[in-house]
Length: 438
Image (cartoon, rainbow, N blue to C red):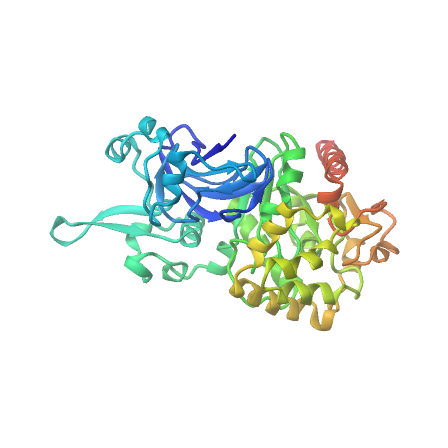
C-alpha cells in the first residue's frame, strides 16, 4: 500500500516549513527509520525519517520552498506499485508547483496560515517582510548559514543588506565577529537535563551519522557539532587538529556549555584529544572511537578512493572497508554517505583538509602524550577488524585509559555495535557524574 510522505508538524506553533535538503532521490529504495529529508522552520531544523520500507516516488526533489503542514511531498510504495492517482498528479506538476491531493482539503489556505502564524524573529526567519520605499513590502531572505551565525552573534537580519540573489543575506554579509568559529553547525539530539554529551564525527560524514547512537542513549542530553568542511559547517583551510579544537571550543563557548562529556570518532576522536586540555575543568569524561592521533598509519587508499568517487557506484567499494563484515554496508548507509560527498565543492574542501592533516596518507600529528595529562575518565573503543585506522594504535596508552576491543567490528563501532557502544557511554557518563558530585 502506498504511504504518504508529508511535511510534518514538529512543534505546536508550526503551520508551515520548508525542505532544506533531500537525502534520497525519486526512485531510490528507502528503509523504515532512514532519514529521507530535512526540514527547516522558524524555530528548528529537523531530520524526517521514512515510516516504512519501500521506494520513494512522487517527489520532485525541490528545496527552499515554503509549504504548509500536511503537504504531501512524496509517497513510499512497494516495487512495481503505482502511487495513487492524486499522488501521480502531484508528481507531474511543474517544479515549485503543487498539484492538489485529497489531503489538501484539510490543510488551511495560505491566507489563513498567514493570519495565524506568529511573526518570526529577525535572527531566525528565512523570509521576513520589511517595508521599503513607498510602503512597498519586500522580503528579506537569509541562508541557513547566515541565520545560524546571526543567532549565535545576536545579529538582527533586518538590519543587514543581503548581497545574494533577490537580496538574500549570505554569511559574508554579516559583521566580522569570528564568523568562521560562529558558523560551526551544532545540532541538539536531546536537550534533557544534566551535563551534555558532545559528539564529534569522523572524516567525510556529519553530525547526522550519530543519530542511531543518540537514539540509544535515552534521555541523555546529546549534541553534535559538524567539523569544519563537513555537513553544514563552513569551508576553509584547516592546517592541524589544534586549529579544529580551537574552533570547537569557540562554538561551545557560544552555546554557553560550562560542563560536558566528550566523545569523538576517527578524525573527530583526534579533534577530541586536542580539545580536551583546552576544556580544563569543564571536561567530565572522554570517549574515543578508533581515533586519529595515536600513530602514523592510516589507510590512505581509502581516503583517496572516497574523495575520487564521482558516483555512488564507485564510492560503495570504499565504504565497504569501513565495516568488519562488508555485507553490513546497507543501501541506506551508502546513500547517506553519498549525499555528503556528491558535491564536487564538498569533495574539494575535504581533499584540502586531508592533504593538511593526512599528508601522503600519513597521520602527521601525534597526540598520544596528551592522554597522560587528563584527570577525567577516558575510554578507548576499537574494532579488531578496523581496516582504516589500525587497532594496534591502542597499545601503549596510559594505564588509566579503559580499553575496549570489539571482536569482528570494523572502523564504525557506533554503527556495527551501537547498543554496546551506547552501554559503554552510559557507564562512562554515570561514573564521571558520580565522581563529580562527590
